[in-house]
Amino acid sequence: MQSFRVNGYDMAYLEVGEGHPLVCVHGTLGDFRTWYSVLGPLSANHRVIAVSLRHFFPEHWDAVGDDYKMAQHVSDVIAFIEQVEPGPVDLMGHSRGGHIAFRVAQARPELLRKLVLAEPGGDLDASLPVPEGTPAYPPLAAKTIRSVEMIRAGDIEGALQNFYEGIEGDGSWRRVPATAKQQLRDNTLTFLGQINEQRRPYTLSDAQAIKTPTLLIGGGATTGSLSVMWRVLAAHIAGSKTAVIPNAGHWMFEQAPLEFGEAVSRFLTE
Image 1: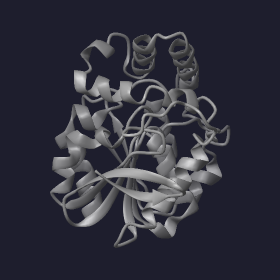
Image 2: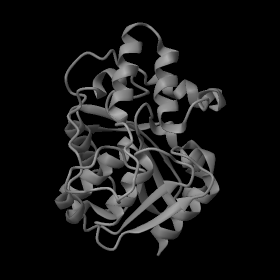
Image 3: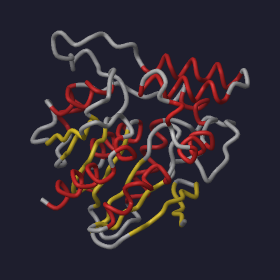
């Protein structure tokens, strides 16, 4: 584990492999360990740099303070990338980390060579309508609010199960390996910050502003709004490419690491 001093914060990261730098940004309840299962496949051809965002493991945050904001995390990732050589870098984000990566590409495209968004999280503005006939999925923010209530009541396990099964479906929590569950537990209190993180919805003009060559990846078995959002964004990001990882859900890189690594590596080496 190493760290860069970023906006007054020691931002931890892991670095594996040689080649062009690929900076990886985890999602909700994640950290640099999120990418363990694909470090092997990706580091065969790339210098993989997996970061832990502000207040995530190895920090054990007490949920005190008001700097858990989407804008802060975007600013931190930008400042981190500015210290990575050589640039421009490739940037990959998953879920909430995909939202961060999207905003980095929107704000500082000169820092990036290629962009990979694995089921980026967030909401769509009215200017980005979903295809006709798409079911009306409840917003994931409601699950976050419920999990926060459960954490404050002392039910950590219930909060994590509520969050995870809200994405992967009923009964999925019991199938999660113990090591993956522990990673989520280590970051539980970040939920308390996320509820007021001030994340803006994606707009049509946001999507059209992305000029970095972009790959959007989805799990073939993902359900709910996360299965729709990346496809809508792909339709409006000029020249973007898409890939589907069969028989995998939202955490596709854990469930199908070889297939995920192959899709990402193929795009980055084109």
